[in-house]
Image 1 (cartoon, one colour):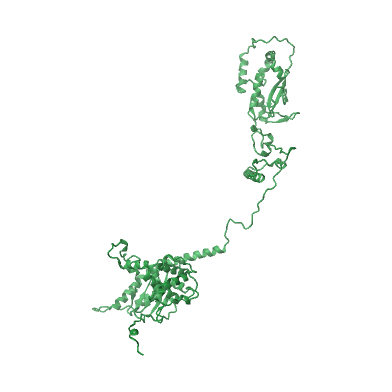
Image 2 (cartoon, one colour):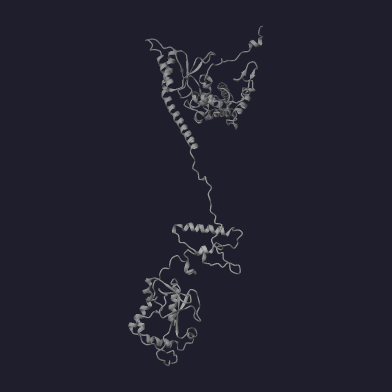
Length: 578
């Protein structure tokens, strides 16, 4: 049967024979895809673990979702469809299938073109497990199709290629400076974007390298259908073995007058290129080792962190809080135990906590005060008989505010002596005694009772107070009753000599320089008779003192405590007035 003219005129495309490679390293598609990754993307320096073609091949052989392969697919999808969001490892397979389905609908031939159907066949319906569950041959074909689609349809990739080759689409417009071709050393220059063989030997075999790793590919003429492709070096030792082999097969020196052939010149150029890459390979291997060591250290830290017990502030046992629901009674408050100074802050805080718990809610208690609920005793009317100083036991409170003496922790310090008697007894400390009426009488100190005095709580016409009492001194009776002359304003005092005046001035200075002293001295006893006569003359015609003080007693108010010097000043003033 003869073929029709239409069938004979149809030309068939270039069909590569099926490969019998057992590993991705022996497929030219691996070189093609990895070369695109190194030249048009930054995945090699950005993706952790992608440092050489061997890493790419290991990710391609993985039957499970691999982070390296996931990021490669995500980058390819973004170049074809910018703004895509579904790029995680669990949905990246369906995203790739949706992107490729758009190109499969066009009449453009792809890797999955079927001559019998005259259309592209979608391979994803035949892969129930998705991209990662397919074999490495199908994965490599899908990656090849994604690379070819980017080279033809990605605006970013096409712009990079046009700029490197100096292609200008709108020549009538002014060319910006960024549109000019980059210099040869630029990563996006024409020299760096091209994937050309490193050289060929005298047997016409081509050597390919894609990066600074020791990986070397060898192929025959790629323009022929019968071309072969394989990997000949993946480590530094294999690379050095290839270098020695090329060096041993190098052509000998030509004879005089003879010229080298093109194949011999190419072989010598290949030998020089392989020798120049030795130092570059050593540096690249050192960089890869540092990166791998860093990854291993991080993995060890993660593994050790999972094994050891983390130390946190959370406790394994529930804390047991002690709540003082039962406030202490007044009886407990009276029993005070002295504590060290270092526990004062803790006691204050604990006291505040007790107050807050006893008073309850602040909203409901409008009249609640800080220490208003410590007293539990009530009187007959139902109102609390609260001692204002019961809450201050064990604390230093000033006696000037009216605090009783039992609230003081330490005895009061002795005061400076102001009289002759108190100066003598001031060093012996203060002491107090209780009279029959319940008064606390000072025995020592400035306010001490004299042997000739008696303590009286109140005197007719005098103010009564709980802060002082009255010391009453009997007035000695006159030896003989004499008839006193009527009072007169022209009473002359007996003359005082210079020695007596000096003694009186000394006593006035000792007692503050303002009031005379009430303590008898030697000079005063010498003139006792004169003093009695002057006293009787001064009160002879007075009726005021007779109505206030009995004529046979001399009253002097005394304070209970030497902490109030103003009462002693009052005592001196009364003495001077009398």
